[in-house]
Length: 79
Image (cartoon, rainbow, N blue to C red):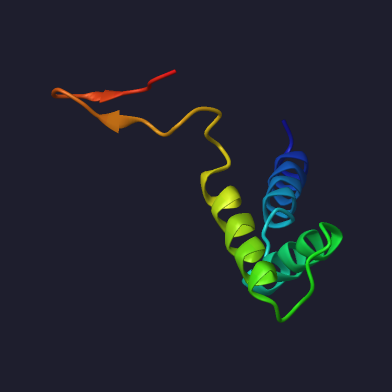
């Protein structure tokens, strides 16, 4: 493979990786938009609770089941 092709692939991979970065401000805007779309109004306790749930859902969203728990000498997933 030529050097220019390798360099082009590396630059493309770098740009693709950086395109997935999201700032905390952008995440907050996404959460606010989601909570507003659910019918919650900014400045209310329900809106704040919605923001918290959205944040927790993003943090633990990879779990399709409850997170693994320590039980009897090892980590186990329970159905």
